[in-house]
Image 1 (cartoon, one colour):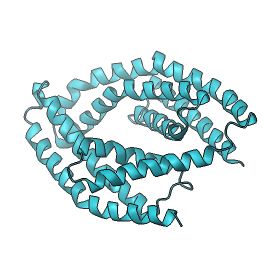
Image 2 (spheres, one colour):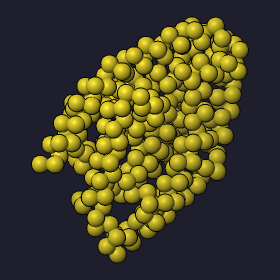
Image 3 (spheres, helix red, strand yellow):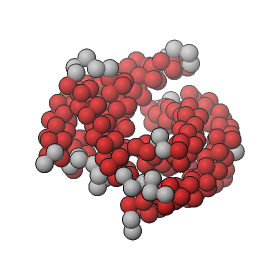
Image 4 (cartoon, one colour):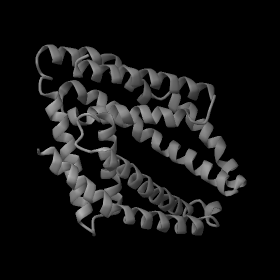
Length: 260
């Protein structure tokens, strides 16, 4: 199987996952349907990211981005409900479940999701046409270049102790997802990949708890929980900071090896 064949097969497989996740949303069959739908969308966007300026990719990438954007508030609501249940605040969790179910139904029938499926149906033919025209001959080099650029951005951020941690979290996330999408083209070795995942987890926990504290400013039934979230946020950030130096060291070594 050629590289392009494998690329197309991955997108088609993710399209099937999207259909399955939407069916689960419609049926309200489980609590992970939206999460799995967003994972499929994220994987599609990660595959497309290095090629997002190609004419054959632009519309699909934009449609996937719109689904990601419009489903984020509902996913955030899912996560905070789960957190409240876990922490022993059933009243606050239950009061939000009705809104969550309504949002699930809206997402399943949304124009954004319909548009994404339409673009997925169109994309394969146009991408194959670009392949026949020779426009994808340099695709692997483009992807490798994008991977190294993102990792170099991360290295620059890690070297700067004053670099904004919110922006660093996004760069860490993108670097990890790109590496996961193209493991054979990434310069990162197993240890760096594991550390990248660990740092993303710590920064993600910090970000979540920080956002929940902000949410408590307008949702007064969360005020009693906010002090606990503030402590957890500080602990998660401290944990991330402890990991950053080691991550930087491993990334620099992997980039140096990739020049050989």
